[in-house]
Length: 205
Picture 1 (cartoon, helix red, strand yellow):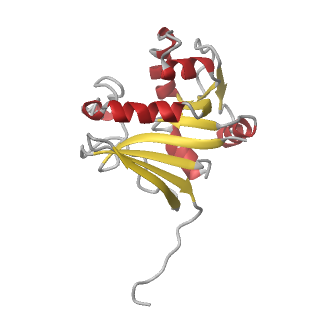
Picture 2: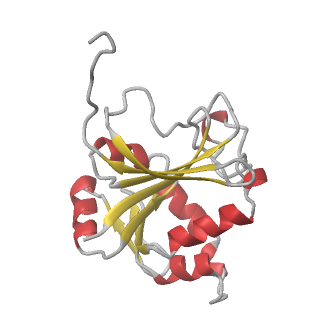
Picture 3: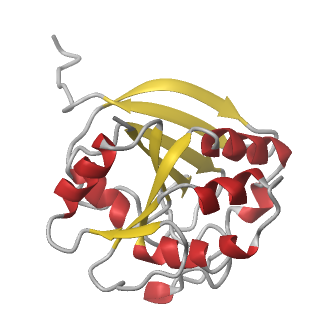
């Protein structure tokens, strides 16, 4: 059985929308696409490769899937550690509209009961079932306690608008911190394990 891991780029104010390119996701009039790129140094790249090497399969939201499918199948160099994993391993896309995915190894899930489908994929996957980005899917997975490990990659920038990983009304959830690294460009690479519901107290006690 796999651990479901969610790896997400976020700003200091929690925005996760369109980190990789200006035209990646302009929905809602978002005009700050590509905000993570200036911080993508060699150390950051090595971290992403290390994460990818743990994957047993990938679970992606529809928008992220379309972005990946438009790029990675054309990267055929077997020495490319990211392309080789993405192209070779099973990919599951959460969608109610995608009917004929062209990227080899893709299975569409979530047409009727997405939470049940994700649990079934976890049961038959070894290693990590990895979610990357996927701004609509990620909050759903968090709300249904399906995320085992959260990798929160925090970039030293504030945007003031955009899609957030934890929107207003997000399910109260506790996580246990399991590790931190900081790159030379100032990106904080945090790892957290799911730890149930928050616990409360009072400093007045």
